[in-house]
Image (tube, rainbow, N blue to C red; front, side):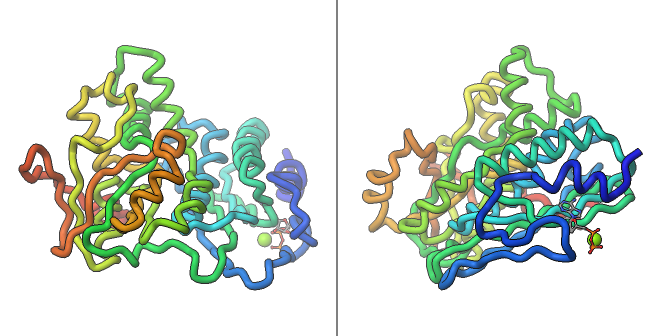
Length: 323
Ligand code: ADP
Ligand code: MG
């Protein structure tokens, strides 16, 4: 069986992209990183706990991907450019096949985003994966949850609810008829796509932005509240995939899209004065986003359907409210 040092050397010393701004990466007491003059450093961290964030059946490759994807999504929501990450890994045992798959999931996504793994920590214990990500943004150009105003148009990227359905499938709570639909939804849960390029392009147009991790309605409500506004979402405009619609039917698919978690799409607002330029310069068919509602002066979050307010209870996922 390998030692801690062999695990680090074998799987994490050459993981992700090689960057010229890393004079010293994995192997010393700490990494040395060359920061770009005049930029703001952007930092985020996220933990995946076995039994909390994933099931024992979740493939290791997916865990490597997701541990990084959730962090990339946070940087995307800031409009930032990712550069470096660190990995704190707690493992019950050294399982070479698991480690190989985990590391390759992380490596492939890191390569796609030119992100270097520059350090971390490896310990024994119950399976727990923490990734910290570092990136940069031009001062004053970072997107925040606050900054939007009443009348701003609300958008979301991609489709929502797919990952929540994927989780239900993995748990055996959903039995779809088509293998293709099942495959797609599981893929959306196991391998979310962080919208990093979109986040960066939104710098010029968005008044506020949040990544959708805890359910679209709850996260849109967080953005609105941070901006001192309320929000109205239009049920008929909530984007759902054809596959989710096949499995659940249109209505239930939209309901799940509003409250399901793990989408890692971007929910953002654009002031009415910039909407035309935004939709012209970033065409919706190429950038995959949809107008879903509007910010309001009165607080609260509501979903409208054919002129009436739908009763939907959600505050988004909270680790301590349902423990
Ligand atoms: P220290 O005792 O100084 O904390 P470690 O033995 O924990 O050093 O780590 C040795 C080197 O390996 C450090 O550069 C550390 O950042 C890196 N490292 C440890 N675990 C990981 C990991 N899971 N992924 C990436 N780098 C790691
Ligand atoms: Mg250490």
